Length: 93
Image (cartoon, rainbow, N blue to C red):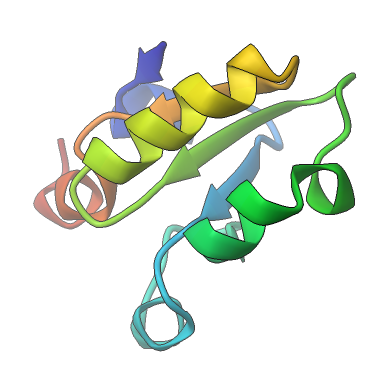
């Protein structure tokens, strides 16, 4: 399951997770996003996610977050990948 950046930005108070490395997050990120690296999130999802909440995750271009969202959904979490990732955010898609 995916959502476009434009649709994400229309949501009221979405829980957004940037799964890129900390340096890329520090350089710039989608407003309101928190940074949890892909490795941390995949290793310890129970530490960061609540099965009752919906999360929107993104990476640089969308492939890693799509993979992560599929794995996390199989574990029972409500996770939606942001199509095109940070690149689409920068391009205004």
